Image 1 (cartoon, rainbow, N blue to C red):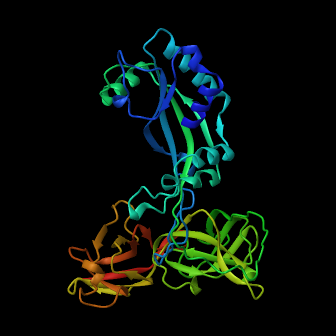
Image 2: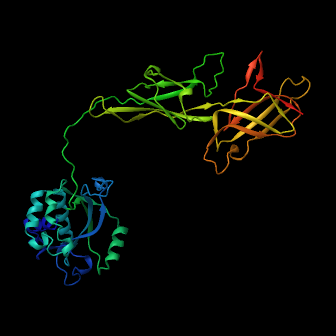
Image 3: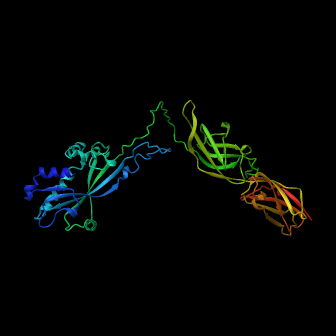
Length: 427
């Protein structure tokens, strides 16, 4: 840029217009001579550097998972300059600034030829990095002409307040006519050895539609008048769209299932929960995964593909209870399907059966023992039955149901009334 301004000074014969030789410098403002001995000239000063946003993340990451360098990511910088005009006589500074701004306006891009021509006039030890310490001599300024993107020069508007702060920071004696310019972008790229991959032996190109599965609801496959609530022995239907694919996986809770191809259509997937291990009572998050068959030999190996939204269903526990329990023992053993996890919250409910019409039915609730009865040093994380302790229960016949993480067990109907499971509490 300095060379461009210098050529413009000579081409436009500004020396004759100002009546004095005109110098173009690139010094800090505080060392430029001013006052009575001030000479007409232009000073181009680089006062600020900022990362270029377009190149900020280009070429990253530069290291692989083993820490080996795989690329020399370029550092993209925007250079911010102050262009100052000097002159002790009237209108000298204004004339010089006008010519300089017109010249930069007419030359918005620094061509490769112009950069090479300018750098060739600089002593070779400066271009090669010979003037720098040994550790930095690999930096070659001449690479600027070969960088992928040309350097563009654009005016940068600075307010009087901003200029005042800058000149105060420079601690220069006298403020001079000043304008701002930005040169973008200058790329600095390292020359360190990188780990290169071998050429691709064989390329596989796959073209496929963007088909994301969508779940609308998860329901029981049982038809009315059957109970629509889902238990561990139910068959569930995942309803939605775009569900069919070469490889389909379904995640229900912590279990992952591969449904049979005959149970999959584009709008529905059927899953028998009897075949799913690891399910627990409570809310189950459900998601459909499509894997893509890629690679050789055909049909390829499954790779991660598209994922559906997450839908939920409630898995209700089923229980078994003894025909009777004694107040004397104060315990009742309840069996669970599916098994109950150590950290699940479980409550037992007793509700008086066939209470007289004019008397409110008795009802009781009891919490499971700590950790659902699993000893602290036990390797087990789930149990199939829990011993509940009860007290102050009036003898009689009671319906029994439980809650596991908020999911209630089912009560069976007979003649339009809840009938079982039930137990008799004896005195």
